[in-house]
Length: 350
Ligand code: NAD
Image 1 (cartoon, rainbow, N blue to C red):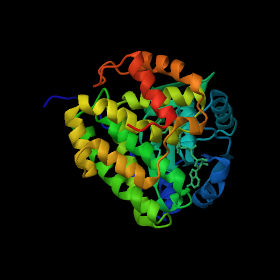
Image 2 (image 1 turned 90 degrees about the vertical axis):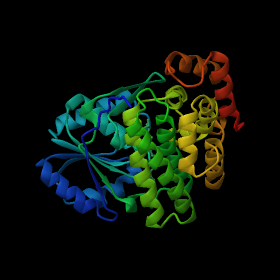
Image 3 (image 1 turned 180 degrees about the vertical axis):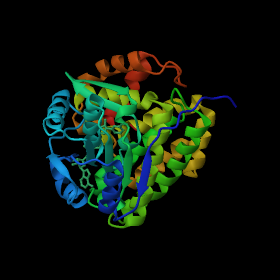
């Protein structure tokens, strides 16, 4: 065994029904007195529940998916003009993403309170979009100082969105198995994440208001994001990154649709990863495990259902080819990528 592994410094507080008290303790610990609470307008009630009573200098609700640069600039101005000394994000990946964009510019610490399974809170990856191009990067300043997981905050997440978001988390851990910095530590986290998500998501589907499944899903989402942050972006993430930026597609659903196609492409060329994924699913093959779970969850199947135009397939394939990881297990050329993206567009499952 020979590898180099970085572990990101972050505190995790996990306590269902306790986000408000956990956050209050954390803010006291940080010693900050002028908070900017970032929450998309629909999550305002959740943010009030969690942050009422704290020293909030400004509440900010202008959030948009994929963090458009102008939305990020506006949020930075708000942070400056209110002289805030810490950021609290309450919401899904779009909200965490905006807090990260502000932290990138200002260096302010973030306390993240996630309400979906996107996992952005556990990574040092930021993303911003301008002119249909999504730019991403890594920076230690954007890693939230602390994450507060409270499964009760996810009870209102609609079932279809919960399933798509959970499959987004599953994509982090499956792609981590062959990503550029895959190593035994992030592979172990990824395998545990697959096990936890494949047990938890069916429970959420069966009983969306039950805390048990929600906790499993949230814990699995955290593990998968840690494995992704450590292993880096594999082919799956490169494809979704291009598609999300070019066509403004919904993030979680895009991941849910693309995942089986990437697994089918890479699995035969990465037998060890394939076996670990299969074992984590408790299934004879990785493909079978994912197929059964997706069927059970009524997973999204076609990118065309989410507004991707057919004439976008060719430029998307070109753009993915330019960014695909050089050491991707399956050899890639423009024909492979075009047919993979076309199959995902049509909903033609492998
Ligand atoms: P999102 O944050 O846009 O949320 C999706 C929808 O769910 C929104 O309509 C939101 O209002 C709603 N919602 C959120 N929480 C809710 C709750 N508890 N109850 C009811 N409704 C709720 O989408 P997402 O899928 O969570 O995040 C996607 C974004 O996150 C993308 O921009 C993606 O690039 C980013 N992301 C970044 C990383 C990273 O490491 N940087 C990782 C994953 C995702």
